[in-house]
Length: 226
Image (cartoon, rainbow, N blue to C red):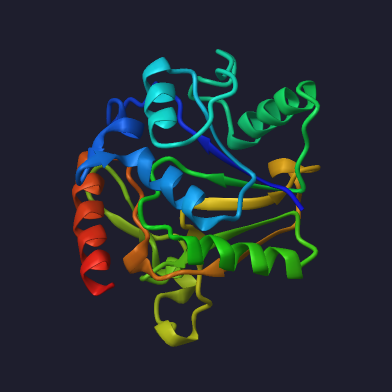
């Protein structure tokens, strides 16, 4: 069995410039993903897919491989993770290399640890799914979400649930934005996707400067708890 870790890290982040190598409590944030993948012992190779020479240098400094640079086509805002993984697979095929499983680990995922990666793999291997990912439960019922117009007028998306008790509403989940185990043959193109729940305290989208500061608070709390 061979496992490949792919860490996508393009250089064109706009909301937080140079986000993937921005200092996060003492080291570039991508270093956390690289080090966790390497320390887990789950992978035959840990590689970073990037179009940016500086990111490539940082990735190598922390032990990842950058066997090729990402194409311009897959480095813009419209390229998906599936596109990036397909490109990586094609490059390894040309090098006459193949794997059984892929784990796509996001570059801004400092909360993941080896145990979580291993848990995801065990769940995946017991299933017949094409991919598995951690998910986090919405803290507030999505059935009670409201829209607001320019005058501030509020209107429920699902008014039929205005008086439904919270405990009677079906829980909803979202992508934790951390990692995705998938089969090498299908990559991220498979249709059968499963998830497993993780705590909201260990999940943080990092898209804004406010997100970044909240992530630091959560990370320090996690470190203190351990």
